[in-house]
Length: 258
Ligand SMILES: [Ca+2]
Ligand SMILES: [Ca+2]
Image: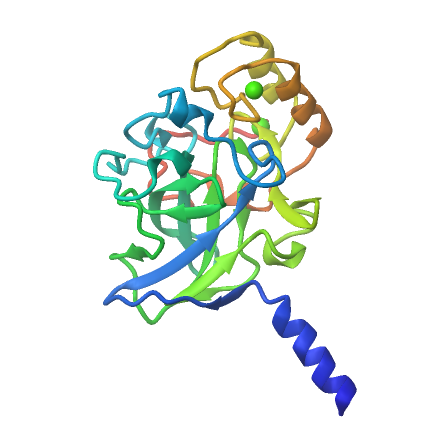
């Protein structure tokens, strides 16, 4: 009996989600994820913000994701010094199809918050009582999807256990933290020569916001190449769900098998 209780306790303590303190009329969740290129062991790089290079409006409308949301940092009500970059979060139904998206701001501690700075991220266009897979996308890093469906009011943290991300070995371990792998500079969910080519074309650039700046310090150099080299050949689990057919928001992007 004691053994059983111990097993239950261990399973519970490694669970990827817990109840948050969020309360809303809408489906609302709290999210945390750490991104390998940006993480220095204690926090994520805020160079784009401090160097005033971060786009005011979410930049994914011009990328492979074709996400057309109008989120801006203009009404951000929080500690602006902690802003790292923009990311896109998708809610997915039981067949893993995208049914809702939001542009979120990544903070240096791994929190993903709304453009207003709210930790409780609301989704107005889905059922509050539904449970959804959560995928997180940042150009430069592979996308990840939760291994379980997440209900309203829950807190999901990708950084606590490998099993939190669906698929095999979708995260990398560093100092006890699970990080989202970097090196997918073109966002097609495979780290290969196409990403290297992006780096090679602009491999000595400073003070620019670029998705192949793997460590997000606004300097493109060999350090960024080394991140790519380390993760070369990694493939993201959610690759198949980035097709035009599967993503109602990806109108601009025609997926082509590399
Ligand atoms: Ca790629
Ligand atoms: Ca860099």
